[in-house]
Image (cartoon, rainbow, N blue to C red; front, top):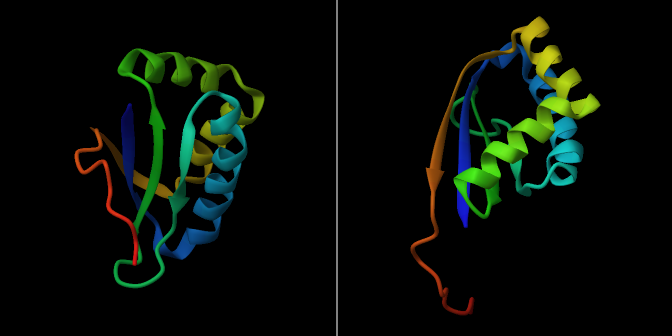
Length: 107
């Protein structure tokens, strides 16, 4: 299993648009095959850093997932929404794998 961590640099004055974008992915991503952990908007600290985090079995599954997103009507609309509104200034992706499992029990 791999986890994709997307780091967004967003316009802090348009956070509401990022939150709509995140809700759209919250509907679309699981339907297209990702195990969505969530999209996270700024709350405290940096007002311009946001994240999207989801897992997939492999990089090949990631490529297939991206193709399904591009073909999905809401996915296409969401890409276009972000492009037109320009609330995302920059984004980067990092692929990680869980190294701490198995986890201990919370006390």
